[in-house]
Length: 54
Image 1: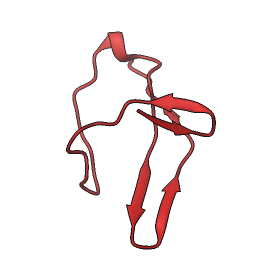
Image 2: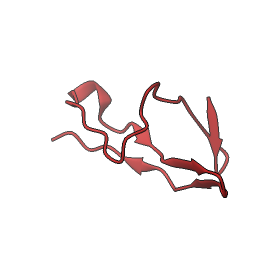
Image 3: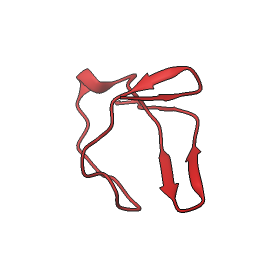
């Protein structure tokens, strides 16, 4: 679990590519996702994005 800007997120195991794609279901509507980039210089977090399933 990671904490970003006071919110808690579950890490997605193996999600280390530049892009992440998945098929969203209606049950996932409103879920929030956040990026966390890590390299030799440190860690950078982004604000959460909310998933909208129409």
